[in-house]
Length: 476
Image: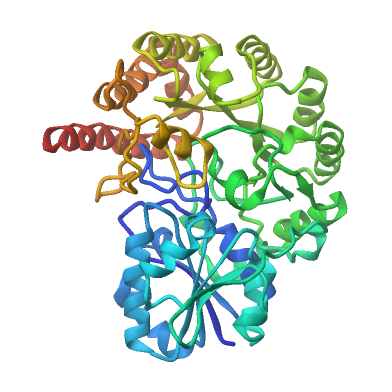
C-alpha cells in the first residue's frame, strides 16, 4: 500500500517526535526526530514520512498527500490526540478510501476509547508496532494481524492478540536514510545539542521502574533489548558518509548506560570513527566507564535527576541515591563531560520544603543546562493510577494549555497545583540568574559566534516562555 507516516500539524512548537518525553511546547524551542515513525517507514518500501510540526507545515500544506496514498499512519499522544483525530477526519473526507491507523502510547493503552473517539480511524497499533504496520502495508487482512485493535465492517471494535516483543533488534533497518530522504536536518535542534544533530536508538526498553515515565510502561517495556554494536556502527558510518553536516549523534535509548560493558565497547568503536556523541544516562555511572566514554568522543549526557529529595526518589521508584548522583556529577565535571539535567516538580511527596531542597541541590551540583517539568500523569503509567486513586488528579487529558504549555495537573491537600506551577519559574530564575551561571553562558557565547546567535535566540524564547506562563496564570 502507498503509505504515508505522519506527525500531524499541531500547535506551534509541538515537540512530539521523541514519542514519550516532550509532547509539549518547551521553554526553548526544540525538535526531536520522529524516530518511532521513521522506524516502520524504513520497513515499508516506497513510504513517505512527514513531520509537520518541525517543518512548520499546516493542513493546507499536506492535504494533497491524501490523494496519493492508500494508508496513513498517524503518530499520536495524549496532548495531541484531539488534533490528530481532526487530521484523520480531514484526510478521510478528502479520500474516503484511505485506511488510517494510529500509533503511540495513547492508543496503546486506550485502544477501545481511542477508536470510539475517532470514527475516521480504522485501526490502532498497540505496543511495539513496527512489524504490525508492515503487515498492514503489505495488505494482510486486519483480522489476521497481531497487535492491532480495529473497526470491522459492522463498525464493531475488535482487539486482536498481542504481538510478541521484538527480541532481535538487528531486524530493524536504519532510520538515518529515512531522515535523509524525507526530513530537513536543520529543522531539528535542542538547546544542549550541537547543530545539526541526528538521534536514533541502539536499543529499546528501560530496566528502571520510574512511576512517571511513559514509554517503558506502555510500548518499550522494561527489558533493555539492544542492537549489536556492529549494527549501530554501520548506521553511524552511514551518517558520516551521507550526512556530513551532522556535528553530533545523540543515542536516544532511555538509558544507554544501563549496560556498562556494552556502552564501553560501543564507545571504543565510536572513538575509532572520531564521532562526537551524547546519550541519556542515569546518574550512577562509575568514573571508569565515564572516562572510557569521554576518551572516545562523548560530549554530553542527558541526566534525569528529577528531585534532590531522597524520599521523593524512593516514592517514584527511581532507584537512585542523591549522594551517588552528586558524586557522578562531580566526576563528569572533572572529566569535562557536559550535563543537561532534568528535574520534575510536583511528584508524590512534594512539599514547598522539598522543592526548595531540589532547587538548592541543582544549584550545588550545577549541570550546564537544566529542564524543569511538572509531574505529568500520562495514562498507562503507575503515576496516573496513583494520582487518580488518591484524588490528586481528575483523570482528564488536559495536560497542556491550548497553546501547548504544560499545566500543573497534580494537586495535593498541602500543596496546590498553582504553587507547584509557580515554582517552575522560580527554579529557572534561581538556577540561571546566578553570576557564575551567567558568566558560564556568556563565556560559551564569546568563544563561538554560532553559539552566540543560538543563545540569544534561546534567551528570547525563554523570556517569552516566562511571559506565556504569566498570561496563562492570569487567564486561569
